[in-house]
Image (cartoon, rainbow, N blue to C red; front, top):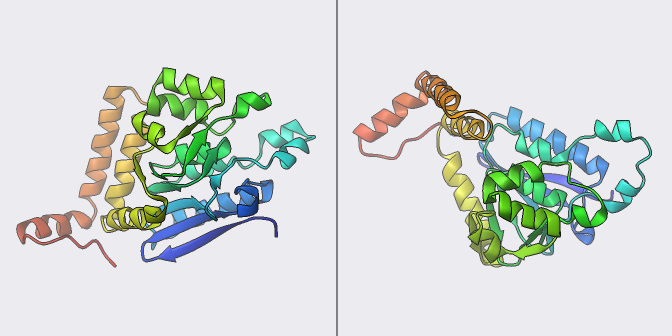
Length: 255
């Protein structure tokens, strides 16, 4: 099989691997469907609280869509109804961390933008080269980039098609941290395990409330946050959090 989506589990954390390293983890339509199935399965799995997404090998997170597959498109209406692989990551209810090394291009960048936290290895090179090929990306870059880095920086990336290094991505807010490549997996795993130790109701409510801020007016967003706060108050995790505070110990939100 030419390329696959692998899932690795460790406790409450699942690691999604885009595994086609000889092609810079470029994504075929079959891989897009597999990624959609993986994201849906992990969202439905109560044992999983956090997902990490990364690329196989050392040279790339993902170079985006397989260009040969794009060249073979004959039915544009069917293409319109394709599995949009960045969207399936962006739509996950559970927290998602992207671990980035090497090339993070096009649809690969859009997958990273769909994650909640982006941690880059020093080798990461990020870019949106679609304009140089004659199109705009279809996975959300034009919508998510301005929200992360501001209009001007987004337009510089989207209109030039240039790639930027990890350090520059950090300076404009495109990634949240940069670490040495050899430390990337351990650094991300530690962060994922820390988040996974919290109440899954709380972490998913935090994500839902914060994502709402991207599309809701302020007053509606504040009301939405309060409803999620009330929801969290109905969960038994609230009692553990209060008891742990009173007893001066770390809270334990299930095994």
